[in-house]
Length: 244
Image 1: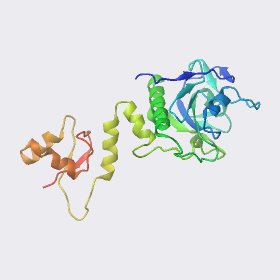
Image 2: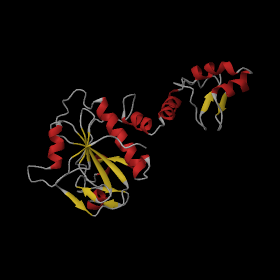
Image 3: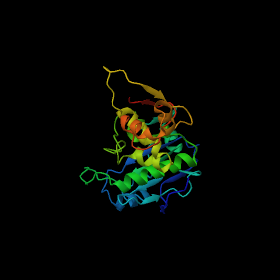
Image 4: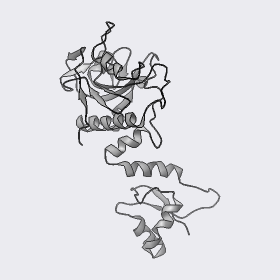
């Protein structure tokens, strides 16, 4: 997929010796929530040896702090971490760290902007494609920490209409399939009244299913309404209610 646009600013604390990339770790900066967070991770002024491969700011801008993702690694999550059989420093060497700019007290409104969530999702989609990862290889600092000392990215919106996953699947060209997967769980059911159903097979369309059950392809909208579908897209394995 197409590489997202980013700005480049080389981090001071990077190391050679990158391991094969096996995941992407999301963080939040817990700083000012502004561009200063990016500047800090590029060159900490307090003596800390920390950095990140990328930052995503509130205006949606992406900053790449690692000049060569295949050669260098950044110091974003090495202490008390475990991921895919790797521990501590090895986790850092084998993962790409994304810091999402956020204020320490979470007082910004909205906590994360739609542009920020969208850019984070598009960046993750590109990294998954570039390093030949899977969606399950995207994780958070909270999930890989072993001593419970981290909870970031705090209050990050993964689910819902404006959530990370919606933007992520859209970036991969699978937004319609994601919408269908959400609607499947919300389809109305009535356990007291058995309903006629159809298990979607490869090549099925709403029109062809309507033709099969009603003799008229034009009744596909009846099936769409009965299953609360947001579009005409259906996927193999999906179970559709067929109204009378």
